[in-house]
Length: 202
Ligand SMILES: [Zn+2]
Image: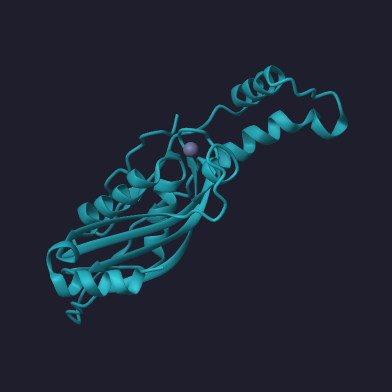
């Protein structure tokens, strides 16, 4: 049961993030019954291992790597925007359990501490590795950074293609969904907001 797990707060200098485990044999048995109910015969050599592969594939999609939010004192007093663009993103739509993929841009206005840049991608990965909706994912990344890094502002933009929309239902190939969350100075200060949006516009 991974849904809704909350990263726990670590020591003064960082936040440790852990997630609970998965019952693979139970998931495999459920996948077998699911495929059987869809009329898919699993007798061939090629399909025999499919329930197990499905279980392991979804387990991987729902298991983020644990990480520590390493921060450093902002000794130089850097107070302009820090932005990591084009962070690869993959998640699973919680309404259809189909993948959505795209990119995330994550930026912040530093306060007393700055963060190791690769950690911004790990925060995105952490919240993407569970059944999600893009709106919540965007908000969770922004709010988690606001709470744990305590910057003067945070901005997150996500652009993604949802296969539940492009492969089925509306069948709109090429349709892209864009969501954004701006907090603090990136929301309220007109110059910072305009700079962030200009640098993250598709
Ligand atoms: Zn969906």
